[in-house]
Length: 442
Image (cartoon, rainbow, N blue to C red; front, side, top):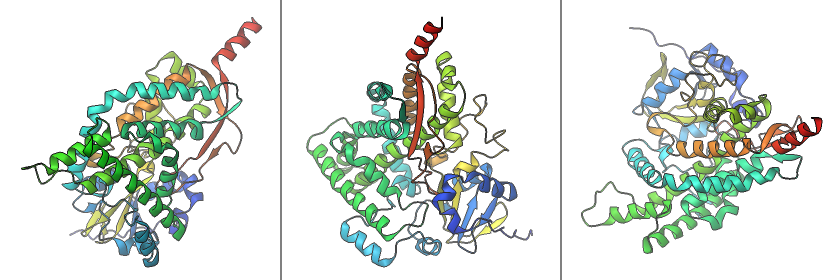
C-alpha cells in the first residue's frame, strides 16, 4: 500500500495570506505554490490550499468529503482566526444578525437542500430573463453619459458598481433601497478572507439585520399581493409549499429571506468585480475598443478573459467532513480546504501563457469565475449580459481609455475571498473628438 505523501507547508504564512497587501497582488506567490505542489498546508493549521485546476475540480466534485456547510467547522475557523468570539456573537445575536455569514444560503449548503434551493432560483431567473435586457440597455444608456464633458472617470465607482446595483434592485423590485445596497454589500464582505475586527462583525450583523427586515416586509407584501418580479416569484414558491398536499421540499419563508440576501450580494458585488477586471484590460490592452467596434463578437471574448484573469470570488472554502485525500495527501476530518479559483484560472497546464490577456484562446469559458458543477452561479448569464451591453454601448462612444496615473487602480476592499477593486480612474478620448481632430488635420 502506498504511503501517504507528506503535505508541503506553504511558504506564505496565514498572516500574509489574509492581509490586504497580499490580496492586491497574490499571483506571483500563488504561482510558486502551484508549481511546487498540488496542495499545501498553511503553517500547522487545519487549513489547506489547492491551486491547480484539476485538483480544484476534484475538490468541487467530491461534495461527500468536501462540504460547503459550515456547521461543524467552528474549531477550524477559530484556529485560523476568522471566526467571531463569543462576546461578538452575542452582540450579533442582539442586533438580529447572528446569521451574518449566510450559512443557510445556496453557496453554503450541500445537496439535496442546495439542489432544491438552486433550482428554485434558476427557475425564477429563467422566467424573467428576457425582461431585463431592455432595462440593462436603458441603464447603460444613462451611465455612458458619464463621459460627457469630463477628462477623467472612475469606471468602478461610476459604472461598475451602479449598473449591477440598479439591475439587481429592479429584478427584486426594491428600487427604493438602492442607496443602501452598496453599503450592505461592503459590510457583508468585510469579514470574508481576512482577519476581521469585532467592529467588522458588528457592521456585518447590522447590515444583515436591516436586509432581513426589508426582505421580510417585501415577501409579506407579495404574499398579500402577488407580483411577477423575482421577489414575487419567491413568494409564489412559498405559497405553493404551504398549499394543501404540497411537497415537503418546498420553499419556506426563512429560506426565501436567506435567498434574497445572497441574490442581492451575488447580483451586485461579484458583477462589480467582473467589471473592474474588464475595465483594467480596456485601459491597458492597446486598441481593444477598436477591436470591439470592428467585430461585436470580440466582446464575449473580452468578458471571458477578464473573468479568467481576475475571478470575482478569489477563493472558496470547503470543509472536510470525513478523512479525505487530495493528490495523495491525507486531509484530516475537520480541516478547511481553500479552492483557489483565481490561481486555478492561471494554471499553465490548462491555459497557455496563463498571465497573458489573450483573445485567441480556444477554451475561453473553461475558467472557474462562476464556479463549477452544482455551485455554478445561477446569475452567470445575467452578468455576461450586463457586460456585453455595456461594452457595446461604451465602444460606440469612447475611442480609447488609459489609466489616469500610477494610483489609478485601488483594491481597498481586497481579501483572499473577494479581491475587491474599489476604484479604477481613467482618462479617455471620445470617438467624436477623435473624428473632429482627424477632420482638422485633413
